[in-house]
Length: 394
Image (cartoon, rainbow, N blue to C red):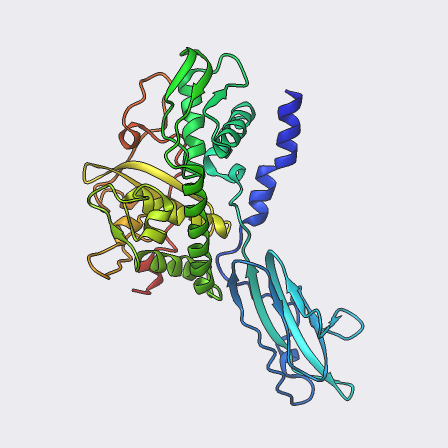
C-alpha cells in the first residue's frame, strides 16, 4: 500500500490532466480600454504575431530597431511598470498553456499602438499513464497496469501478477486498458497465451508479441515522424475544432480502408498513417495518437454499426464528449466526408444504426473483442456545439 500510494503521488494524474486541457477558442483577453490600442505615435511595428493553436513551444522574435515592451497576461504594456523589456537574442518564449500577448514599441519616449495576440501551446498526454482506461481503474489496478506496461515495453514473455486474489477477468480488463490506451505500444497482444493459478487468483501470464522489437521501433519512429508533419500542418489553427479538422483531413487524404484485413499494420495506428491503409481500429488508433500529441481527451469505443463489429473514437471539445468516426468519413477515392467528425448520443441510431457495447462484466465470459464489451465506462456524449454541420463549415 505504501508503494502504491507513493507512485500515485508521483503521477498526480488528475491534476496534470486538468492542467493540459486547453480552451476550445482563442481567448484574446486583455484588461485595458480599447482606446489604448491606438494611443501614441504612428508606427508600423509589424510584430509578426500569428495567433493560434500550436503543438509545441514557440519563440516570438520581432524585427525592430526600437525598444519593445510586452506583457503575456493581456494587460497594457507600460514601460518599467507592468511590461517586460524585449530581448532581441532571447525573444519571447511561449510554453504550454495560454498566452495573451500585448506588444508595443517605444520611440523618442512615446509608446506605439498596442498589438494583441493569443497563443495556445498544446501539451502532450503521450505518457502511458494518462490514458482514459488507466484513469478508470482503482489505485491497485493502476499499479498492475504500470507493471504490465513495463513488461510489455521490455518484451517480457512472462508477467508475474504483483498481488494475490486478482481474477482472470480483472486482469483481462487491466490488460485491455493497457492495449487501448497506448496506440504506439504496437507489440501489445490482445490476449494472454496462457496463465497460471486459478481464475480467481491468477499468479502469472505468458505473452507473445505481435511485432518484434526491431519492427516496433521502426514503425513507431515512422508514425511519430508522420504525426509531426500533420501537427505542423495544423499549427496556427484559430480554434481547437479547426486544429482537429486539419488532423482529420490529413489522416484521411492518404488512407484507404483495407478490405483484405491483412495489410501490415491493418489494426495499428501506423496502418493508415504511414502504410496508407487499415481497418476501423487503425483509423481510431491513428486519431487517438494525434489527440494524445496535443493533450486532447480521446478514447476508443467498440460496438456495432449496421450490425457489424466496429471501433471509433470519442473526443472532448469544449468540456463535452463527442463521437468521431474517421472510418466512415473516408469515402471512395480521394473523397473526404465530415458527417461523422463530431456527433452525439442522440445521433447514434441515425449515424449507422450504431450501438455501444456494454461495460465489461467480470461475471460473464470474455467474448469477441468488438462484440464483447468496452473495458472502461463510456461517457455520455451530449455535445452539440462543435458538430461540423452546426459550425456551418461544410
